[in-house]
Length: 151
Image (cartoon, rainbow, N blue to C red):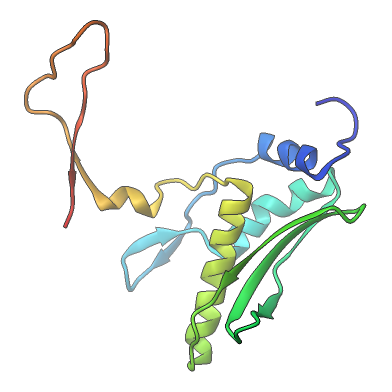
């Protein structure tokens, strides 16, 4: 893409072309897993917003039925914007609510910008094992792997 991007879509394409893989550099001792915190996401994304001149906002809002929600908004300097609203679970404990909001902010950014995160949590759901016998090639195709779903 040459020149200055004109539309928000062109600006998002410019950002996505430069996105690195986000590294999981934090450890959750409770689940014994690695994750990338919200600061890591912002460290990766914020510098990429400058050249195409967009801003990302994540204000809290309330839906018409009273449900709290996170609104993720991507806006260009001309006012063109994309947004989506993610309902939040009602939570009486402010500490748990804050943790859940941060969790939703991370995943909203990941989804909105198609961020790749190393060793995504979903991979742990599958117990991948190589086929015990090679799959028969029916004419030039790749051998098929066998996947077992963990229960």
